[in-house]
Image 1 (cartoon, rainbow, N blue to C red):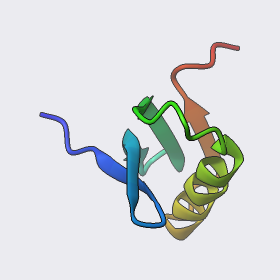
Image 2 (cartoon, rainbow, N blue to C red):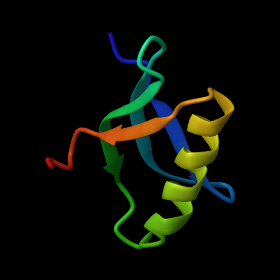
Image 3 (tube, rainbow, N blue to C red):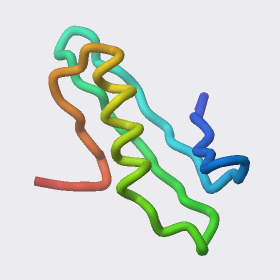
Image 4 (cartoon, one colour):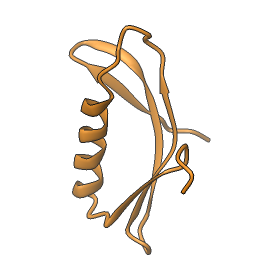
Amino acid sequence: MKWPLSILVGNQFVGYLDCKMDWKAKKFIIKERNIFNPDFNDHKGIDAAIEELAAFHEAKEIRDSRITK
């Protein structure tokens, strides 16, 4: 079951983020990121918010499943 986090910019809903925290490995994992609003293109703001959320959870690493390395 998904429990996505809404992505709000001001008072506008632009999409959602499905993520989880691997507590043992201290990794914040982004399983899915969906941006619904085609007018929104400030992904740097979303990335900064994700980094803050990961830091709050004391994550040592952020892994985005969309990016393969």
